[in-house]
Length: 279
Image (cartoon, rainbow, N blue to C red; front, side):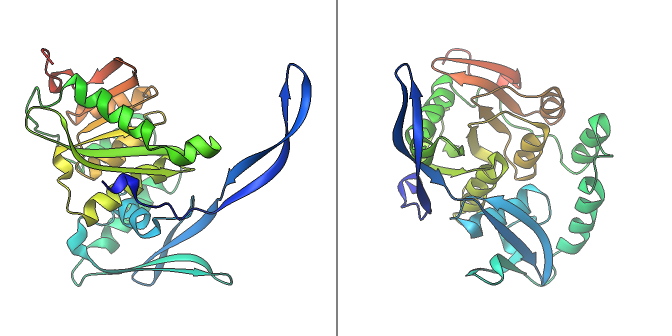
């Protein structure tokens, strides 16, 4: 299970004070590192993300896919990462010959370069690029949804140490509606980054994204639903609630969207037919 791979994360220990009923007492707390990461594609600087160090190549690949700039792994010839004190952290993506990334990047920047695109116009922009999903009903069980949430919590090692990171978990769904043993869990200071990291790793492993269930530790915003849909993921769940735009987009694209997945409870906001009623 890739969730148990070592985490090459830089930590720092801070002398601070705990405040309790008896006043202040000296203590120490661990802090998570935060660094900028430049993503360059074909020699062009595309984006700078503030992220948790580690899994930089997965993050870059996942970001390019969930933002609709790279269509698949076959469009990438090579991905290199360098950590340089002078130039900073850089992932250089060399596209395969014939990739249409430049046209997609132009379209991406047109849509997201300002806050002028919002509401129903934003939904139309995303929906026009993604065909609604056509997935079989009853493809998931309650056990799969709650089981993945529990697995994610069990593997949130950085959160347990620092309390300062989000997580995303991805697992393929087997016949019968249960999640498989193949599990990817990634953590990052950014909830978008955590999703991009699991998608990037899944793409590198050739995981069947169209049959995967994803669990998030944060809220289900419009951007998170759009990212999952661009990657070909139709089933999205989270610990927190969705926004109104997120629900509208999920319903337009025939996605499962479930929030407040806690204990044995959950709220299904879109795609209830995906859950087997007798499971």
